[in-house]
Image 1 (cartoon, chains in turn green, orange):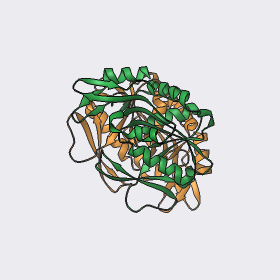
Image 2 (cartoon, one colour):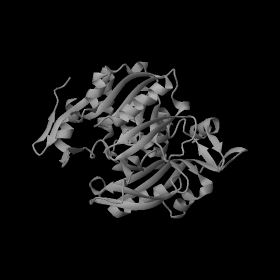
Image 3 (cartoon, chains in turn brown, green):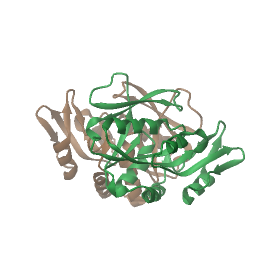
Image 4 (cartoon, helix red, strand yellow):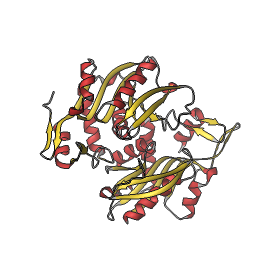
Length: 192
Length: 192
């Protein structure tokens, strides 16, 4: 998606350790117009008229997923990070490893809000190792719901999370795949 | 706001300890159409054509704040919960007490995304003790920005957070103020 790549080139910052900061328009300050354009772009890859919900993970995915859900006229559901080890009943749970927090995190989702009849589009703003999305897929599977697709705005291609999902044959699309990010700038994978 | 009160009456659940669950449409599964109606309602109370940003707190405020920002054609910015005591520079910080987590939480916001020229509308989905909003007001003050108003969807009136803000003479509006919630059901404060 050209518009997104241009924003990343223009406003993204590469920090030591291959960290890419896009917090001026994606995940701290959010450009809602850009989110709407991303939602329209996802609609080219996924049959959004046939989904029953958009699923994302707390916290930074919520903004994009909300705009997508509003456009596709379905509810947005977000998996929460468990507050403690003392998890109440009636929840789907998945264990993921958070590279940001450097610890295991439990994603939880009330069984009330996703059931076997649901057709789910997973949306997230950013993919690195893909742990958050792996956890979301696991929640969809626990519910016996149907995974209709996975839409990611920005993927760090060199960290492998996206390729693992592609290799599983999932209906996965990322709109900007960063192949390299260092002192020489940002290089994108060719549009696919 | 009649539509919101009816949803709370119909779908809200009162749990022991005056806990009100509205997670079927507000803060776990999110009804984006309702969020859009709430955003339109806020626009009756606040001069949304004169703001430069919508500010909220991670995580559950993000959905509503995103829809508001999209409608008002401004960016949405969310204060993050600090990940550790090791806070990097270039940040505004506020210390709040989280009754949910029963501990102190530090809200952080990059100085890049709010400056003295900003005219800020604070939006949150839910107010109980008002600690999150108190922290957000503090961040606005640290930036030297102008607080244009505070819009809350659901306020637990009996916990005092909203009244403290009203008593400070702030431009504060909550669209559904719950005065009582127990085994006898939910009672709203008269529309104001």
